[in-house]
Image 1 (cartoon, rainbow, N blue to C red):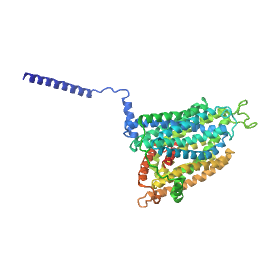
Image 2 (image 1 turned 180 degrees about the vertical axis):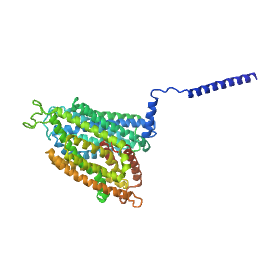
Image 3 (image 1 turned 30 degrees about the horizontal axis):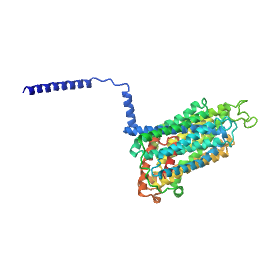
Image 4 (image 1 turned 120 degrees about the horizontal axis):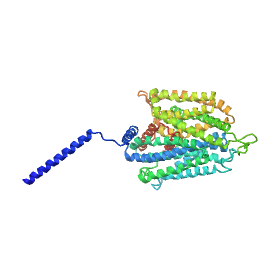
Length: 560
């Protein structure tokens, strides 16, 4: 009994202690605790991340950070080199070589993409011996040596920038231009092929926007490096910095593979029958609706190509006058008595100017996509929004025609590029809604790969014909642009009416539905791919600065 009493006493004491603890807890709840200095900052960023990307799993967040770093260096390196592409070609081969280089790059890029697709087939048919990331290393290494080699040769007294005599026979300028163009198509498409194969649809919904945001930051920082350092470091050094990005992105990809591995489901896929270019061309020829999508997707590039070349010619003349070649320099009388080529200062400031152009264009496209695209489409509706971009093209080409100055052309190009990424691309993708899977994959492939580059080549034919004079280029080239813009306005009106007709419940119609020849397994895979592409489009609104659009198009081509 005594022991029991003692136990009871102990229990009472313990109860009292617990009560005391509870009282202490109540007091702690009443007394405000001092938060750490980073508490509210962390809370804000957690809330912001949840609003922007949803409830992201920590593992998915870590994976997306690694992939974001890869795409950051890929896009940053590309835009750095792209900002140097035209100044290098102008210095080595002359500004009149730019239209010819654009036409040549169409052939070169299509050849490289063909080789790329063959490599994809080889990897998929290797039975798991090789995987997609091995291809990423191979192409990354190739482009590193190409860009590093070009950077080295740019310092050569005969082949490089020190030789102030521009000539279209100088191969280095052509190699530099076409290598940068092919890199933009191949490496970006290879990255997205890898991501689409290793990231689940659920994870894609929350992480793709985060990945693309890194690309947009890279597209701004790359040209910023050119703007800040091309006049102090020199063009070859900045070019070499771009080549180093090829090594760094391989390091980030290797880190991802080492930590997270790869998905093995894609390596065991059976080979499908390829859609083929002729099937896409057949659909294009059969349906006027698809022709209309082609016009909206591609023909504006004729106008952009004309104004772009006008900008380069005016920039060359501007910096040649501001930093003239002085007696005793290599550029003096380089093209004959009294006919000088660009001085070193003019070359560097030309490159700095193009870096500034990249900065402004990518920043504006980012802001428009972030704040304006969805609001414009919701407010105006698709039918009126389709008319907005070609109307803008017409206004811009008229303004350049009557005010042909450097900074007018700069503003015109910046506005057209940004609005094409942020406004025209999202609306053209919506036009594919009332179409079959055959159209979405076969005809779209033909339009995006061949139609887009063909339009650039057509615009280059015009600029090449009038390249002998800036006055002739502005007066005659702008007439071509006005004709194209007027046609695009008519086409946008036609497509808006057709879209409403085909999506109306009473008159619903699927373009190309009768040409659907895809088996059940392919339909499932296509639907998953469509959902993934929609997530990418919603996240970025095609503001991955031009190059990611090319990359996604090449991804779709490689899948087929």
